[in-house]
Amino acid sequence: MRSEKRRFVYYQEGELWVGWLEEFPDYRSQGTTLDELKDNLREIYQDLTSGQIPLVRHVGEIAVG
Image (tube, rainbow, N blue to C red; front, side, top):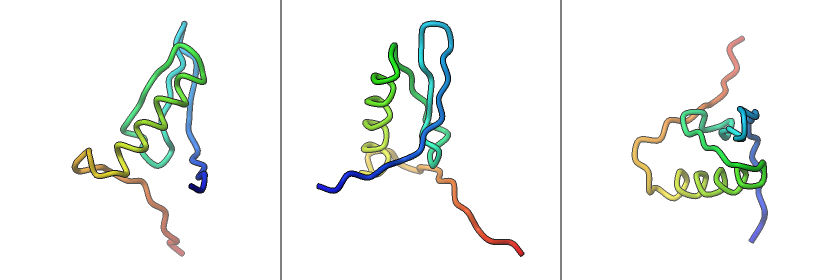
C-alpha cells in the first residue's frame, strides 16, 4: 500500500493538541499528544474518504484569471 501525505493545521490549547486536515476543515479533532492527534486525523481521513460520512464538504482550488 502506497503511503499518501496530507497537510494538516494544528495548535496547542492548554493540555490538548487541536487540528484538522486542510482539505476537510469542518472536521476537527484533538489529542493529548501531537502523535495522538495525528492518529485521530488519520482515522477521520479514512472515515471521510470511505463514504461512511454522508455529505462531506470539500475545499477545492480553481484558477480565476
